[in-house]
Image 1: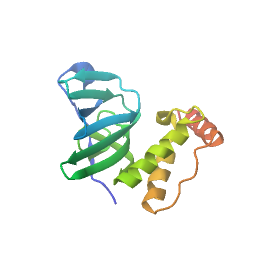
Image 2: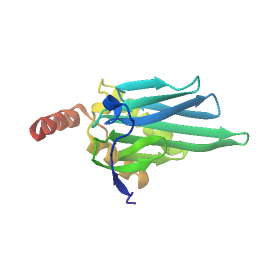
Image 3: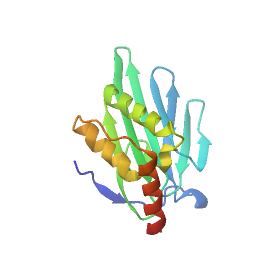
Length: 170
């Protein structure tokens, strides 16, 4: 599925924050739980006791989890692994993310979300921060889960190859 691509522009009127990708987080226990599973925000603003706004610098990778329920059970389970965009860069829209981002992985339904969370735990187990893992790996995980196949493990060798490739690309 191809998502519409738009271009980032000024996000807020505050000069130093207008290049950030902003994510609105909500936490109402057992009702609406929107949270960041991994990633390093460079900006945070508490909006009220249930909501806060976090910002990610261009190029930062983060996992955004959304879960919601009503009186009859779960109505939304979703995880997106997103790369923050720079001003004027292309992006895909995503609810509660302004302006949007480069979506590397998307999973809907609790079984798939739980599986992605297990994969994130496996990436972290040897000491690799998931936000530093190769963006191509997260795309690989997305495609394998969409095809009901098991993704390959993110090994130390794979991570070392990514770091070398990244140093050459810079």
